[in-house]
Length: 467
Image: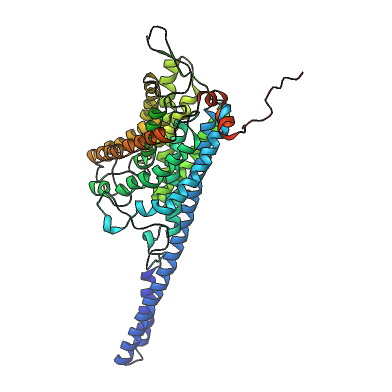
């Protein structure tokens, strides 16, 4: 900030030095002129400060946007690594397409649906028109308190929109038809995701109720998680995943192993890297103390999630399971996302450890109910998203020293479930009744790369019989 006190003192010294040799009228005129000059200098310095602050804040927000974009590479890597090689092209095609779907639908209607303006504050639904463009009377320094520009606001939030759809991709992998999946993603991301976002981030009824979701444990991750669960139910399990026991005495679980653990590890670490932008950018400025604290709580929760998943999975399986600690780290990240700004480092470790434990037992429970989720998306994003949101109501303290309301957190979780799960089920079952959502048994056995795309991710491995 400019040193107003020093400027005023210098001006006063100058004026007083003239007082001994000037008339009272002259001194009054000089005082008025000097005061005006000082005020102009203060305003000029303040304007320079505001412009520099906006530049610094905006640069960080754009860096955070790029980090969130990198998360899509992380999702693509971990999903392809945890699925079979014969479906890799299909998984990658979906992940790339979703980025386009998320950004275009957000530009078309999602941004103005999530942020409809003051006229809809406290409500359930609002919409301020199609397309994006600078608001009337736009001043980049005044917009968002000087934290970022309008354009940065759009692109940062647009990356979040695409993330919600990516979560669904892994849960329905290896048996969903491509076109119906893309149609589902378009409808869900264009309408359902921004509606939930409006309830909180757009000044809707959850914001009025005191609900706190810093970067989206509920608004992004459980929104995607509820859709993932709906897709798993509507599609059914992959062929050979659950083998019936003769006599109708249950089923045998047959693990379908992913084809590349290196890819899966790279994917998890890229997601963790991107989460620094996902959570750190949600500070919505480059405030050094706030951003650095969020980095700390985010990392500690992820680290704790690794060990929260490692110990029970090792005890249960009698072997250390790499996939479980990958999902444990992601569980910790999802869990801390709601309250990274309002919990202490010690509390973030507790949240991460419990998330890691929860994800292990959630994966086991889903298999017992024959809900086939190839990458654990439901367990990581839905179950741990709910946990992280509620945990914020247990430990969160806001900037004014007030405790986050657990009941408000519960209301946010419930309201999101009431909209998202039935809506996702309706879209999936509507598509199933019309276009169909599952590939044929022959395509599933041969792989979606050949069946859906006519190409393979890894060429040169075919065996040819020659005469």
